Structures are given as structure tokens and as C-alpha cells.
Length: 368
Image (cartoon, rainbow, N blue to C red; front, top):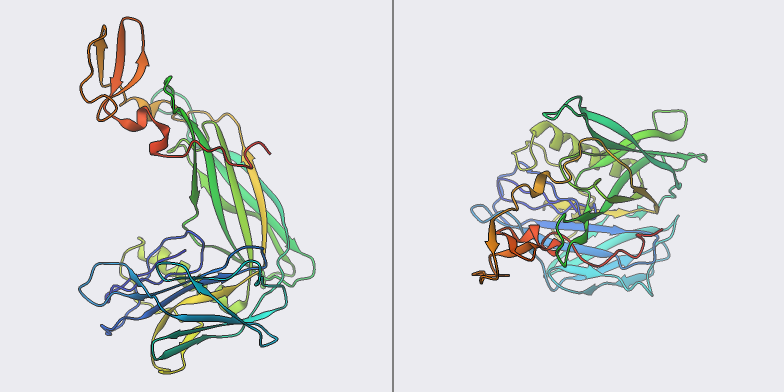
């Protein structure tokens, strides 16, 4: 999911699941502007359309969820599906009744009060499978302060549509990694899951084949503990129309040129949604329709110089001798090592309990 804001403090909720960035359109309007985020796929899952309005000038950054809308999706056979409002401006399809299919054409319609908004008809294009997803070690630092090299991990992707149906690609991904607290505490092993927050696109229309080879999708540095135990990345590959590719390319260019996600930008990026009631009204966001293919990669390897224990150097707080009471135990002091004659405590909860960062629940796919 991508979020954009501006001089009128606009929040444009874009279409990447779990992608958060800021775009600031140039406008003199102080009125609330409709912001739409939507993606429907060919997967057996609930599709979500998020609807909000931007805050006017002088208000805190963000977007206000818009409740009480009537939201429908109409297919190429003129069959309409009503979306149910769940909460916070989220409108969802029933996964047992609605599923997109390749070749289908879908139109989003939103009725908000006395205003009606309609998207352009969007065709669901086919998407090929991800051919390969692999990684290579890369040296970040030749020699650190201990005289050792430090390595990271570059993840690459390749794909190929032999029929040349999918010329424009977009990717997002979900990272999951296992981490271990290096002390004998009850909650020492956890898992963290995070979603990508950047825009990854590729145009193959300029080539003779719809082929992507060794695309550098994601670099995993040694700044976190992602690679210390075991790491997984699940990549979603989407098919785009030329118009949607151009949309994402403009957003990507804006973000790269301003140098920061929340800096002011001078560009207004057009939506594929317009207001029937008031054609001059600005609408932000994009209604996306795409087939999806997925591929998962596991990495369990040794990387030189990874900061396995560096983040825990700050953990040692005090030594308690004998069986003396520990003030604030399990409130602001935690035992990380317990010996017969003394205990070592910490004032940092995340040094004693991995659930401050992750979950104890092992992912169902973890042993694949």
C-alpha cells in the first residue's frame, strides 16, 4: 500500500499491499479529496478497496477513512458485486462469490453521499510464473574494525512470457525471518514478517521478448538480523497495462527525484478514477486489476560479519548477587542469565522477550 500527502496534506493510498510512501500533488484546493486504493486479482481471497479523504490544509498528515459508501465492482458481463464495509473505510468482496479471472474486465463504482465515482474498465491480463528467484552474496565492507569482510545478500528474479502477453511487470514481496535472542530466556525464538515498501516495475515492451533476466529485486544488508538464522521472501508478480505501468513509473520517478518519501514534489499523478457528478473534481489513487503469480525463496546460509550479537551489547544492565529481590522485576527489569550465585538483569525488554519484536507462532510454511 502506498500513501501520499501534500500541501493540502493529501494521503494517496496506492495499490501495493503494505507499501507506504508519500506523494505530494501541487494544488491550491483546501477541500477534502477522495483517495482510493484497490487491487483485485485472480486469487481465491478477499479483495479490499480502501476509501478515504485527504485532510485539508492545516490538519495532521494522513487520511480519513470514508465510511458509508456504496461500492460495487462490475464485470464484462455487466454482473455487479456489492462490497461489504468492514471497518475504517475498508470495503471487501466475498471470496466465495467473487474472484477475478484473466481476460475479464472490471469497473469500480463508488457512491459517496451525493457524488458518484467510476473507474476506467480494467482488463485482467495474464501473468507468467516467476521462472527463478535466487540470491548471491555481496561484500558490503572489505574489512571491518575486526578485520573481517561484511556480506549482504542480493536477491534476483527472472521471468519470461513466451506469448508476449505480459509486457509490463510489477512486484511486491513479503519478508519473514527467524531470530534468536542469545540468552536462556523463555521467549528466545520468534519470527517477524514485513511487507515491501518500494515500487518494483519493469517494462519489456522495448525488447524483442517479454523477458526479465536477473532483475535485482531486493538487497538484504547486514544492518538487521534477517540473515542470522533463516530468512524467507515471498514474491508476488503482477501483470500491468501500459497505462498502469506509466502510473507507477511516474510515482517511482517522483520518489527517486525528491530524495525522501515525505519531501514536497511538484507533480500531480493522474488516477484512473473520475467523478461522474463533478468531472472537474480531483481523485487520487488507482484501481488495479491483475493476475498474480508467486514464488518463495528460503535463505539459510552463513554470511561473514553479520552482527549476530552486536545489537545485544547494550543488554547487560546489572548483576544481582545471591537471592536478593529485584525491584521492578518483569516490569522494567528482566533476568537474562540466572546462575546459582547471581543473576544478570537487563533494562531492555527486547533483550529478554522476543515477542517485543516478533511472534512465537511459527509460520505454517517455515519447514517447506
